[in-house]
Length: 193
Image (cartoon, rainbow, N blue to C red; front, side, top):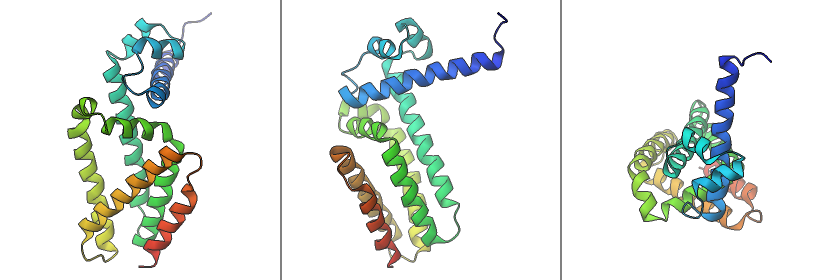
């Protein structure tokens, strides 16, 4: 058997890291952050506890990596949507991608929503989240200004709150929540403008 190449080893490391994060996300979504231990995460991932600690120094570090990956996904989604020139089409693409990510990554949103409601955990993420949130709101303000809204910041905040509420209802009532209908209704509402 020939030794593994550095590319193969890097791929194996990334796969192991992703396995830990994916397993932790599932456990955090089902049991909450405090309801899962790093030992259980490792066991469910089919790894030793020591190997899990080799990749992440703590359960908090795992959670931070999950949150950062979630933020990165949102940033990718926003970049694609905001690259569209026509502001009406930009809004449609933004809503289409937002709803797709919500449906695809519902476990992440369940964990994230749970974190916001736990002050002991939220404290560690609040500053990072608020910086991220202001960037998103800034993009929304620019969008609503280009659509001719009288108060683009107020509309951006209302839009963000609407998306948050839809996401919460989807998480609480999945799979019964009519996500596609709600998305289409929101698109129609803004297209009427």
